[in-house]
Amino acid sequence: MKALHRIIAQARAVPKNIVLCEGGDVRVLQAAARAASDGLAHITIVGKPAAILALAREQALDLDAVRLVDPETSDESEHYAQQLFVLRQAKGMTVEQARIAVQDPLCYANLMVRLGDADGCVAGAVHTTADVVRSAIQIIGVDPAFKLVSSFFLMMLCEPFHSLKGGFIFSDCALVVDPKAEELADIAMAAADSAQALLMEEPRVAMLSFSTSGSAHHAAVDKVHAATDRVKAQRPLLAIDGDVQLDAAIVAEISQRKVKDSVVNGRANVLVFPNLDAGNIGYKLAERMGGAVAIGPLLQGLKKPANDLSRGCCADDVYNVIAVTSVQAQGGR
Image 1: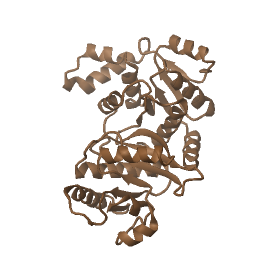
Image 2: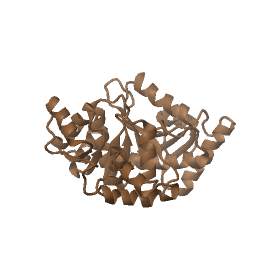
Image 3: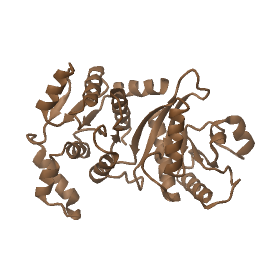
Image 4: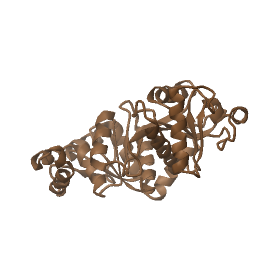
């Protein structure tokens, strides 16, 4: 799994401060202990230290290299509450409500990221995706280069039986249900940035459709074509094809037959789906029938990194997302 190995090596090369907020979950503690021991990142866990350490002892986990922060006793809690009040007072939040809110480990962890006391946050083993994304958007905020937060999966095809090998970005597969052309363009540009940071190679973007080069006429195709034109205008040096069917996006011979003046040439490493139906089905087909390893959903378009986990994740999944978050933080997004 060379692409993932490169990400882990890059994370270790410049370890970042990653905060976790679900210390009552064994999987999170296992990943935290391993990440700290391996030098993958400097790990902070927000929660009740006594309960976290008791669970660690029960599981024979060494958390000596992990920093534990209790929002109830932290010297930073009042400062964080005041900052949260300033941030959310226009939405009706009072100072007292802010003081209560920062006692929540997810809120506290995202404030650490916003205020520069951590470089990235990982949550979702316990919290729902809706809670993780809402907190990240409200506290960390959307990168001004984009207009929305979207998601992607890092897909690994590295087994001997894979005829197509390497790492791929699939986006958006978890958040934006039916993006307009402008939103789809934002997703594509964010996904290209994710590929640059995580695959460590030039992004080659395919704007997927049931049509290739206008072979079908439909409003859904028009949307993809308009989004592609928007990306080309804003990122003229980015290799991007659209509208394009999946086979023409990833098979060079088919691309040569179907795509006039292609710049991707059937070698896409970023697949941008036209809506959430297609994206969710696409990544699960690749994972369940194609044997790909899916890491995510990961978030893109935030001012600073914050990533979601599946509540069905294992400790290895948490570890891998810590690595991804650290590499994202190295790139400043």
